Amino acid sequence: MSEIAFTREEKVALVAKLQRYFDDELNVDLGQFDGEFLLDFIGKEIGASFYNKGVDDARTVVASRLQVIDEELYAIEKAV
Image 1 (cartoon, helix red, strand yellow):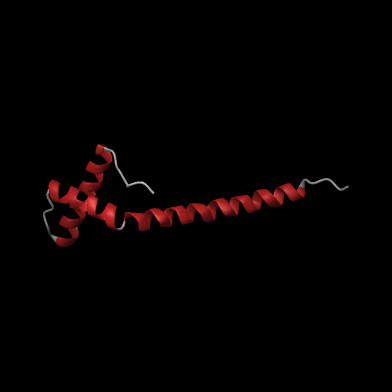
Image 2: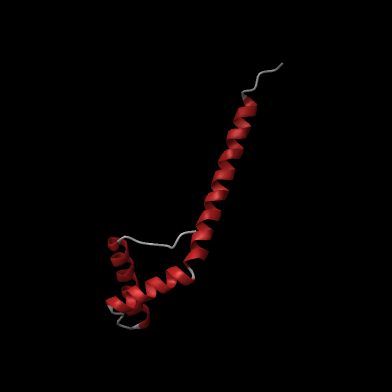
């Protein structure tokens, strides 16, 4: 897996969410630099766990869809 990278716009939005959370829940003023540092830390240290969970969820959806397709293919088979 490659490193998790965000566009500048995504990073600004994510840091804003972190800042809002820290302010609302912890009454801590999280500066822009600290917010970016925290976001980078989260991405490097635990981001892969969230990514892998998303891949696993996607795999489950695809497997379910393939099962339906397989059943539909059996339904249209012709008798020999």
